[in-house]
Structures are given as structure tokens and as C-alpha cells.
Image (cartoon, rainbow, N blue to C red; front, side, top):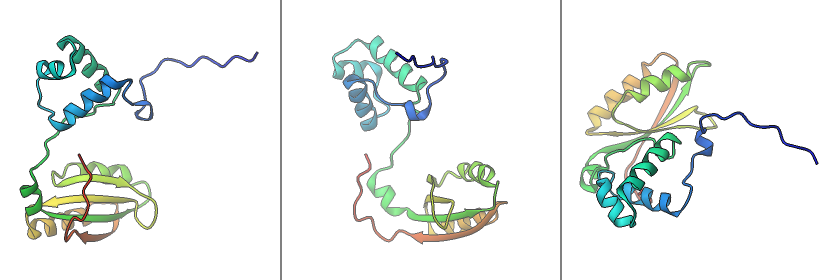
Amino acid sequence: MARRPLRAASAPSDADARPKDQLDRDLIALLQANARESTANLARKLGVARTTVLARLARLEREHVIVGYTVRLGQGVAERAVQAHVGIAVAPKAGRDVVRRLSRMPELRQLYSVSGEFDYVAQLSAETTARLDALLDEIGEIDGVAKTTTSVVLAVRVDRKA
């Protein structure tokens, strides 16, 4: 019988990151509903000890299942913002620097690496069209950005984000 080679122990990759059981999934669901929920309340809702919740959170963070906690804006605030998707083509070998510069923009909601005409698609949310215009100028001036194309969101027809 052939034996598989032993794998060296290493930190889990993001591809390996996933909840281990139903308790992990329930804990994550509660945090997605309210990331500021106290560990005592989480433990009470889950029917486990507070120390169990703390240990689970530590493991989920260590294993990169949970990589951060965030704020969701109310629908009224989000509706008042100007949303846009920006296709960004970059020069060869400039991707890392462009991503680093883009990630400093607080109006950047998501950045996707994509196939096709563009290398990245950025989702922006600005307070006004004037601020969006300024952001687009900033993006265009980043060294390594070769081309951008912007689509302003007129209406959200389906939203399934938690």
C-alpha cells in the first residue's frame, strides 16, 4: 500500500478557511447580524459557555475564517450615496502597487480581480457625484493605471448581501 507523504504543519490558507461545525456557523451568523454583540450574549444565544465563544472566535480569526469586523450602513444612508463600478486596467507588474493605493481609499467598498478587458473592478460609494468625480481622477492618476471605465449605479434591483 502506497503511503502519502507527510505535509509540514503550516498556517491554514484562505482556501482552507471554513467553519468546522454547526456551532461555528451559528456563531458566524450571529456576528453577521450584529458584530458588536457581547460574548456573553452570544454564549447565551448559542447555549454554550462564554469561554467556548471566546475560544471559537480566537480559532476562527487565527484560521482566517473571520478576517475582520465591519459596519453596515442603514439603507437610507446607502441610498443617498452614489455607487459606481470602475473597471481598471493596469500596466504589467503594477497590480500590487495599484491595489495598495486603492485600498487606502475609504470609499472603496470592494475590489475584484477579474478576467477580461480589465484587471480589476472596484466598487465605490461616494457621498456626492463631485466626490465620485474626484475619486475617479485619483484612480486615473495612480502610477500603473492604464485605463478605467466607470458605470454609475442608477438603481439596485436585487440585493442579497447580508
